[in-house]
Image 1 (tube, rainbow, N blue to C red):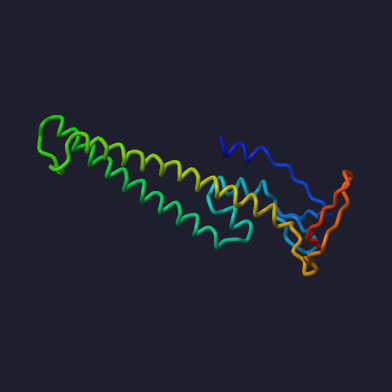
Image 2: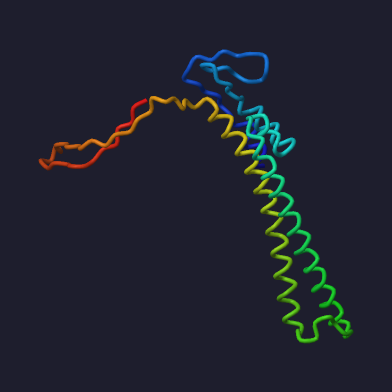
Length: 177
């Protein structure tokens, strides 16, 4: 559902002159502006490829590292869940278990704990995948953002008269670009 929401809900809008070239990207004032839809589709098909398309290849190993770590914890929690589930079944058949100090309630608590952790890691896997797509999409959108040298901030005092007879005194932030 998340994938289709991102895939079909794009509206490209640019407030500057755009010159389209042949390489799936747009030139905007001598800068390479990336297409958000292309970055999103690439990232959905192969995680990390949207980041490579956006010239941010250093993010791809972070994404795959997140996937690898998550897969490790899914496997770890799954093995612990199976271990306690097998011991619970052995206890129900009145066979010796690997955990003689745990009664049935302790084994049930452990089974539920490790199953919950495993299931949460599945959701975390989906979250990492969705963040991969979202990052590629947002990064492509921000490739058209003007980061010129003539940006400046200044604080100025502000005084306003209210219609009810009072006055408003404050500090305003002025941004020039």
